[in-house]
Length: 246
Image (tube, rainbow, N blue to C red):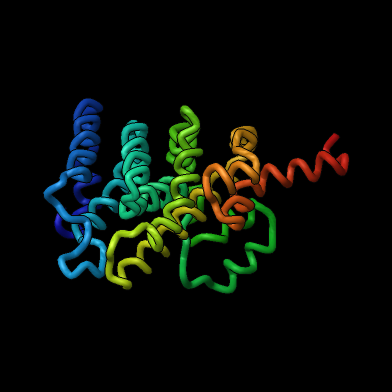
């Protein structure tokens, strides 16, 4: 893929292929993403390479439209983050955006701000440019993929750790690319946290998170990231202590 306007025609054309072909396509995507001969930054080292941006968008569309196993792609992202290759967070960002409808926008309308004042249903309907109800099936598949083997836990922890690694990791980058990667990391982390909190079935899974002390000392998360991940868990504890819901 060289141009973003080729994505939708190719995705729609794939409805004529079988499940085996889609599995092969999934393998080819990971093979292309992991190609060591293709740089994921532009030659001037100031931005993410265009081919990688287009392929990340293609991943979001293809995994939303077709029932392709997500486990291998999520494991690839985890492995890349363990190697401090934060550029690949763009893939996770696009997959969550397309499959769940959750997006992080720099410019928010007045109606979206007002939707935040309401409950979860109002926020889901009017808080995003793409209503979440249009992605119910893909949302469920993404939820199941993240829940399998608790894959969401390493993704959350690694995404949070990448914020510090991008700035203080020691790798020399252009300041423009560093800022771009940091913003992308923050957006993806917030997006993943929003997706987990929007799905009530994840409440039990969120209780598996380590304590605040462990997140801060063992996993070296900053206080804001730790509290963000523990928000649902702490809210349930507060309500339980107050006797609400008993």
